[in-house]
Length: 172
Image (tube, rainbow, N blue to C red):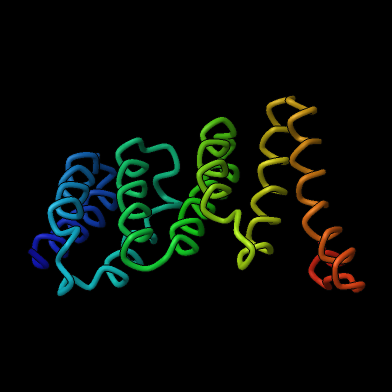
């Protein structure tokens, strides 16, 4: 099974160099991840890092998005919801950088559901700020404002309960 992963990843690189389409390899990788979901001997984190390399090259690939969704689901059960949320957040950032604003909203929304916990308040804050930016680029100013207020509320609540401002709030 591991050889199939490596072969598909190699084929993606080769096809991208030749300006070919990689959809069929992404579909295969998606199937490999689905079928190996419960195999603990598969080096999941290593494979994910190898696949993450292609995120910036394939910002508008639906098959890559499907693969990232599957990887994030597996991360949510195997590792933690924080890592899963960070995967969604990173994909949303890639979409936002490439002016795929509506698609970035989907990933920021998924990330916010995973990151809306007490122990991940900083990541949740950044997610809300990026969500605000995406709404603003779509001329949805009230939604953008709502996300900004929710983000500011995170650190305002911290200040209210502890009496000190978080340095990350001041830097952003």
